[in-house]
Amino acid sequence: MAAVAPAADAAAAPASVPAAAPTLTPSAPAPAPVVAASAGGAAPGAAAPVAALPAPPPPPLSAVLGGPFPGGRVVRLHPVVLASIVDSFERRNEGAARVIGTLLGMVDKHSVEVTNCFSVPHNESEDEVAVDMEFAKNMYELHKKVSPSEIILGWYATGHDITEHSVLIHEYYSREAHSPIHLTVDTSLQNGRMSIKAYVSAPMGVPGKTMGVMFTPLTVKYIYYDTERIGVDLIMKTCFSPNRVIGLSSDLQQVGSASARIQDTLGMVLQYAEDVLSGKVSADNTVGRFLMDLINQVPKISPEDFETMLNSNINDLLMVTYLANLTQSQIALNEKLLSL
Image 1 (cartoon, rainbow, N blue to C red):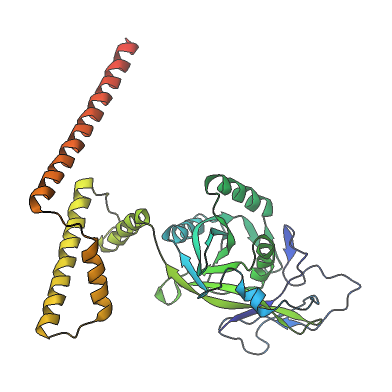
Image 2: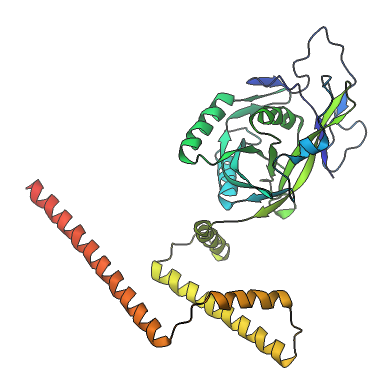
């Protein structure tokens, strides 16, 4: 179910914004209160009423929900983003209940890909929330120098629910990105797991009267680059270590473990093919197409030529290693002679 929360004035997002009554003018009549409801719904009278300003008529739903979600409404998340969020939560200031930050990434025709993030300092209490907007802008300018293709996609917050303060922070990011996403990471590990959810907001209510914001959930998928896969595999190995500590493997050990995995996978494929041919397992056309693509990608080469090519590459590698060690020795010797 979508989470519903009160809207804030679109023009009000200073460094310190009251959460209960955002920038109400004395001359404006106070509209009917809006009650914030959580994703699971709330009992009547369970939440405190919050005043909201009258808002102009909402834009068409297609314009609000279209944005960067034209196909599938999928958010693809990289492991480095989760690691950065958890690290910022562990390093949070004393007494801080949660941390927030900016999500960076790219948008394609079918999904939003979150590739990076950074935390933003903020102070939060029952009455107000203060966010260092200048810090967020400076950090984004620095990130653009390193990764010009990354844009602001939205923001994240630790916790398992959307609060009234989240609406005020979301108003700021609505001016920085079109239809920003809001990512929540449950670092409290409720139900024994880290729940990760993504939302996109849409206005709701009566035009010209009290308006609210509805957070609609999105589909979250996890992807990784090859370099990230190495780190993820190493982190997963700590689950089987009693003290949660594991050392880095050497290059030769990594090659050996990768070769063992390939050998096990080939054994599974061969067993599946034999079971299909013998009639023990019904054939699956999808698996057959994958196997055909895999076979077509393997170059046709005789064993003798392959062995010759492998030995030649090994000799080249050993020669480069020898020259690198020789150069390192020459540099060390030169430094010793200069110091005499």
